[in-house]
Length: 115
Length: 111
Image 1 (tube, rainbow over the protein chains, first blue to last red):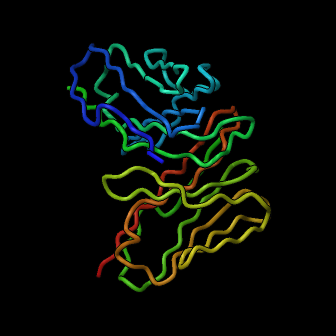
Image 2: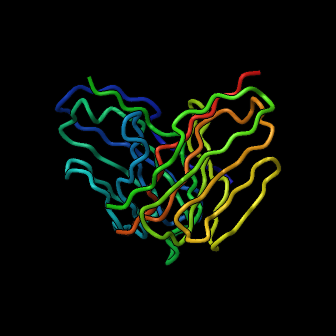
């Protein structure tokens, strides 16, 4: 079974630009979560999508948004990029459903650098 | 707010020595998960603990969940160079959503 894939793997943007990151979950997984990883803040939850609906959201500004498509693929968008948005963005998929503590399968991440 | 504290932040050991990382929560947890992230890699699920006082073993790794379900530990016996990486504990967010992660313990093993 193919794992979680994320594109692109690396991205360099400048302040003020916007960016879209893509995630394809493991086949059959309906829940997709996004995390931001930085050396200072560690791994922080951004949001979770299940069946095309945002089910939960972390404490990030509105510049961070996402969506999920009918095939469970998900995209994350960051608008008006700031230097502090430089991070590794990880997507994780799980079976979803009512149990919110399913094992998370992480993708390789997208390394975003904002100049 | 909800916090999951993990110590130590770094641990340097000689190959063959034991290693332990501790995770403490400000609230009672329904369960706790452990992940390992190799340098340059992504977190990989190791195990989930659900029951009070639960102990699980995976070869040289021993995972414990405290009686009060507020703390957990991961112990590695006789470390090897393949154990290098950052070990994270993670617990369900009180506010819903997936996981809140501890800061991680970075393990380096000197051969």
